[in-house]
Image (cartoon, rainbow, N blue to C red; front, side):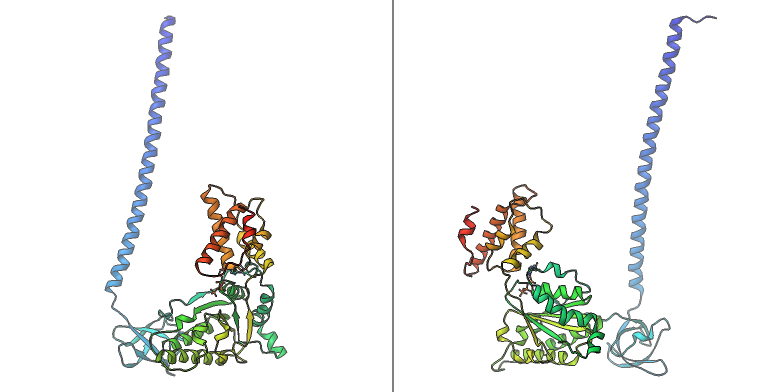
Amino acid sequence: MSVEPSEKVEAKLSLEDYVKVLEAKLEQLVFENKSLEYKYNKLLMDVEKLQRQVEYYKSQIEKLITPPLIEATVIDVLKDGRVVVRSSTGPNLVVQALDSIDLSLLRPGARVALNQRGSAIVEALPESEDPLVKSMEVIERPSVKYSDVGGLSEQIMELREVIELPLKKPDLFKEIGVEPPKGILLYGPPGCGKTLLAKAVASEAEAAFISIVGSELVQKFIGEGARIVRELFQLARRKAPAIVFIDEVDSIASRRIDIGTSGEREVQRTLMQLLAEIDGFKPLDGVKIIAATNRVDILDPAILRPGRLDRLIEIPPPNPSGRVEIFKIHTKRMKLADDVDLGELAKVTEGLCGAEIKAICTEAGYFAIRSGRSVVSMSDFINAVKKTLAKRDVRGRPKEIEQSLLNVYQ
Ligand code: ATP
């Protein structure tokens, strides 16, 4: 039977339609598949979240049902392996230690946990960090390098010899028979890099940096300051090689004309402890002290005696080339316009310290951001210099900058 041409077209059309319907269905299925995948992943995430919650609640329940332990301090370890402890509840006890406990940790003075009956040591506790020393900062390895300190190359050289080298190569000093200083005193006006330098030495000597501000050692309670000093040095010995940095040392080591009040006697006691600690360690024991002050003139000579902080290093305000170096350091990561002249900036910042130069660089960056630019121009810096100088004037300090130089950029 022959097919008419019009019927052929109809048949073809319906096949095309059928394909279209199938394609639409396929699309629909692909879409449904995706949304199911999405739902599945979401459910998986919900399951994981719920599992985490279950784990958390389990651990909380475990904590609630575990009987409390008793804190105790080891007094002595007997030859038969038993341990004498002073429990925090009062009495001295002779107890056993669980086999799982590393006996080398049970030194006199170590903190341990006893089971609830107080009959056995079940855990050696970590050594406590003194909560009273809030401002004590411990940095295992500071990240500051000598190249981050501008304009103090002579001071860096001296510090390398008297602090870095003895910490890194004590044997060299033992062999030659030279005793390096136990500590040094950095003195100079605020914000010129004393703390920065001390951190850089610790970093380059691969030593821990333990710092405290002297005024924190002036405590309300009798004996507290001395105790903190003792613990500061205990910590330093544990972390050796270490640098103990005491900022504002004048607050505990200033010369006293008469020790009248009990507060002054307490400060004196803290100083005595500090001197005893300095006298108590050897120059090559892996601990060095760097003290810093803005008031070297009022220091008690006792702390500067030979064998104590007998090396004095001045950290003066930066000179013009020092200021250029400091500007370079603090603009290292900034995008500077071609007109920025660091030499010129060094000229107009006569008398400013490193911290102020750093503040100028940050402020200049803000000026650029406020004007919607990512490149910092000379006028941003000049505005920042003006702002910093205005702050100085508020603080009542003499204006040492030649205004005429600033006017050039107005
Ligand atoms: P203070 O006597 O007030 O404790 P300081 O002399 O210890 O002051 P730092 O705390 O070291 O001063 O300086 C503050 C900040 O200023 C540093 O973190 C650093 O960013 C910057 N700064 C100071 N001096 C320099 C410098 N010479 N080179 C580079 N940056 C410096």
